[in-house]
Length: 177
Image (tube, rainbow, N blue to C red; front, side, top):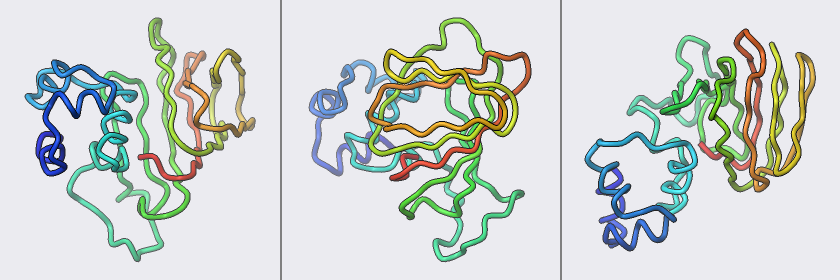
């Protein structure tokens, strides 16, 4: 998919890698399914292609854009490669001004400290469990019922410091998946 999209835009692998801020070798391995990209790499690739990140992750099953209802049993899910996070779309589609997600985060494991950035703002509500959120150089601890709002351009990550699964409700604008 990435190879087809970059060639449609007339970009060689080297031009595309430079635009995405990644190496040509990584892009080549990714296009041949030899590596799994991090969420940060997926965001960079989507930005370079000028598409929502979700387009790289979603299946071909899509709801009608005009359907305002999103049923629990038909919610789209994203399992991020090499991650402990599963996202479910609460929004009926990604062609809106705001995106709502349900995120399930498994307990923290050492070495999972990659920070991400993207355009817009995020609001996060801790529906169950505990959350440590790193925003730039600051770290915040939230427990069930707490919420936080921040600019998504600030490097950030979420971690579950507890022993049980954490459940978050996230609203972000503009949609980034």
